Length: 387
Image 1 (cartoon, rainbow, N blue to C red):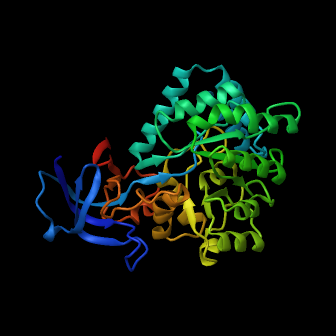
Image 2 (image 1 turned 180 degrees about the vertical axis):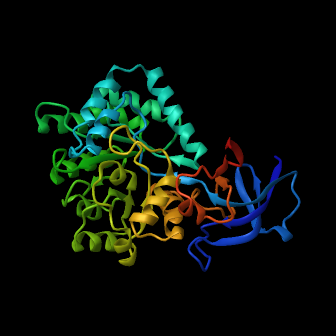
Image 3 (image 1 turned 90 degrees about the horizontal axis):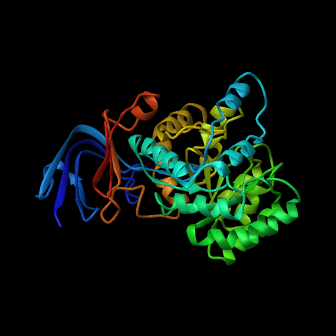
């Protein structure tokens, strides 16, 4: 198997946990890739010989972004809903049912094509690992097929049959989710998720669903505290979930629970940008010792962005994060939220998933918001997108 030397790296973000700084930054660096993994990292002056050399021309290189929260299997368009929100109508998550109807009516081929389009957008913007949820089918058949389609592009698939109650009796729907729907979905999923929020599922229902998922071999995740204060964050901490997502409305007890449990707070600033809700306070969480991840929550209603560079810029501007903290949250933080240690960092043994930007430093991702800085994306050392 041949080796490739990537040299001409002006700044290399390694996220090496042994480094003195948060990002493990190296200057005038190089890395060697063999068999899809990082084999060597160091100064360009000390680089070993390799079968192939690739000069990155002084660009900054970062680990590939790890997007740990997305809803990419869907059909339909909700731009009219967005326009209405921008005209002053409140957001209450009711548009989910609109997407459910369109998704149920779509063919597998249509859903797969839209998924591929969105993953392509993500690749061009530096995302190399993506989690994809179901949740727009809400029938046994449609949840299972959504997950089967998602599994075509990622192993990080999440069963979200508990997105909303589509109609009828909530107790009967919870029984469906924890029974036939879970049985049909489990073979296509790694995770199970619940939207624990007013108008969706309460804490007792969420606990029941997550416990059923655990019994079926699925790891738990949770949407919580997005639309207002609630029990979801503390439930996630109680159950020892790897991550809980949104975390917009927190009290001191919520923050303490996250810190003490080690549960990661995944923040989704694209949602607040698109709904004009208050942004979560990342600074408060970080200062309290809570681990934080950033993700896109790409979905057709509340956050129709596939761009983690955009989310990084918003996190720096409106969530109180430094550029280094935001980059770390979108790479190593996202990896931790998926319980992965093979991605989100560029150290020997890690997967060679990385991106190069047309800039001398990672700071430019926030310094130049909206500019398409990603010059190339590599997965397993293989180029999957170039500018």
